[in-house]
Structure formats: C-alpha cells, structure tokens
Image 1 (cartoon, one colour):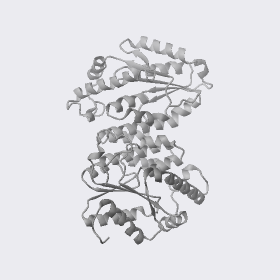
Image 2 (cartoon, each protein chain N blue to C red):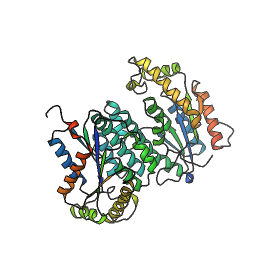
Image 3 (cartoon, rainbow over the protein chains, first blue to last red):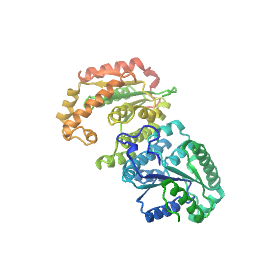
Image 4 (spheres, rainbow over the protein chains, first blue to last red):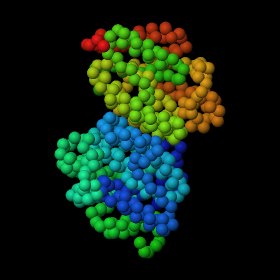
Length: 234
Length: 225
C-alpha cells in the first residue's frame, strides 16, 4: 500500500504519511448491497486477525441529530444541508477514521465523500466548490464502486422496504412529481456523476448485480491483494 | 469571488471582542430603520438549527479546527440562503455583525488554509462596506477581561494549546486574530475605524460613510410597519 495522503492540503494537525492501517471504501446506491458486504468483509478480516472499524455517513456525534431533523422537513437550503454533511464527514474522519488508522485498523467506510459530492452536484452545486470543501479528505487505499442496473436496484428496494425512499429517489430535486420516474431519473444522474468521478478518483468498479456469494468471493480476493494477505483459501 | 449585481446592499462589521462593533452596528440599524429604510440585521452564529450543534460541540469540546470552521460556514449558509440573499434581492440594506472575515481570522489562526477558507465561503458575496473596528490589543483585552472575566474554552482559543492559563491563552489568541484582521485590510477593502474614540463620534462617522456610499433614498420602505 502507498503512504496515506489527502487530496489536497491535510486538515490542521494531521500528517497523513504517519498513518498506517487501510482505508477501504464501498460506494454505491441504497440496496446495492453495501452493508451486507461490509459486514461479511469485517467478519472475515477479524477472523484473519485484523482489527476493523466501521464508519458511514451521518454517524457523527456532532451533527447527526441536526441532519436527522433537517431531513424531516424542508427547512434547510441545499447548501446548508451539504455543509452539515461536510461537518459530519470531517468529524468522523478526524475523530474516528484517523485514530483507527493510526492504530493500524482496517477502516471499512460505508460510503465516503463521493456520494456526498455527487448528491451536491446533482442538486446544482458547483463541482469546484464541492471538491474544494472535501479536498482535505484522506485518499482511500481502495474505493469499490458498486454498480447495479437500475431495474435490479428498484426490485431490491421494493423487496427490502416495499417503498422508495424520499431522498434516495431525489424527490427534493423536483425532477418529476411521479415518484418512480423521479427515482429512475435521479439514480441515472447519480450514476452519471459517479462515472465522471470513476477515472478521476480511481474507483474499482464492482458489478453488484451478481449473487451475494459471488460478489463476496470477488471482494475478498481484491482486499486480499490490497492487504497482501498470503492465505490461499478465501 | 464573483459579484453579481443585486439591488440590496450589504454592510458588515468586524473586529476583536470588545472593539464595540456590536454597539455600532446596532446603532446603525436603529438609524436606518428609524428613517424608514428597508433594513435587516443578522448576527454571526445565530441560525437556530445550527446553534444546537455548535453548542453541543463547544460544550463537549468536540470541535477540531476543521469542524469548527465548517459548522460556522453551515450557520452562515443557512442565514445567507434563507435571509441575507433573498433580502439583498428584494432591495434591503443588510447589516451583519461579523461576517466571513471572522472565520478567515479565527480559523486562520487555528491553522485552516486561507485558500480553503476563501473557497469555502465563495458562495457569500463581499460586503459593500466592511467596517473594521481597530483597537490596540491591550485596550480590547482590558475591556473584556475587566467586564466579563468568565471566558469560554473556544473563545479563549484553549483548543490551540497556547497556554494552560485561560486568560493568557485568550490574550495570545486575540493577538493572533488581530494580526489576521490587519492582514486582510487591503485584501478586502476594510473601512478602518479607530475604535478608541467615543461611541457617539464613531457612530457619526459610520453614518456619514454609509450616506456617502449608498444612495439611501432607493431603500425607502413601501409599507409602514
């Protein structure tokens, strides 16, 4: 693994090159299987003797409560909401990810700055502004980008929840008043944004249309290579 | 930062704690309102939802320089997009007690990159007038330390580890904040006011500047409150 660095200048007080451990990010829409596979990876890594820490969006002690309130009603402007998310992100990065990496943990992140940036850009934020806000983020050792066909995604969502989520469907964007149509349009735009970022940020694309078992084996192989684990049986 | 033309005007006041800027901006807003001009007043760190988070972060000392900065940017974004910008579009004179320069100064002292800070606040337009209430450090310190000896953790810059003594930390922190302000005078065209003078003559001077810079007649209210 390469030494850790941030996309641009690190935040005050952090020298990324002193960090060890590994930062593994899984990106992808809801119902793409992120949490299932993170749980399986965590279990497997711990079995192998690695210490694992799990992080995700909206889990900071600082502002997660406000984010919840904000999502209930439409009281905040998109920029306020995106800055709240940025605060949440850096709070977790500085108080959870960094200490864990310093202690040599493998950090599994259920989404990272890319989802946040894509959401903002789809909602009309200037890409340069968004990129600057997140420019102090640590560069992950690997980003697995889960790609699922939109039809499969919808089916999985209905199977899990029997309804579409307001924010995941982008209903606040007004792309369509029809919930299903809006969901499809919004997810397509998010996908386009992710495609744009894929090269720039070096995502490893993962075909998440496959069965849980097949995907699991694939992911473990990739992680094994990254961590240079020399165990033949996966 | 690009500045599109808006019918309203933005006036900001900046300065150290104890510089008297809040009194001055309060008197300005009383004056403008009394004359029947469309006026709106907004205070740093006053958005309701963000305030809870800031308070929690400050109380539990959870904030790092980065999150400290971001949470204040969130506060301004909330006030800016819901109030300040719509008011400017509707042709109001908006008065701000502290504005983006407070963040540039304080967060700059905390080690945030100046370029990052300026890009972060790139959404907020530059004021038409920025009054900077300039006061020698010792005078500002004297006013605060005499009147209100209970200093708060972040206010005193205790997170910077400048000194274990809170009063000493406050002195050192304010000194560095002042340096940051002084370095911005030319960059952002501050109107520097000598804040050692008496309140009344300072206010007269401020009113004169406002009158000369802004064609006040354009801002008369259409409806009486």
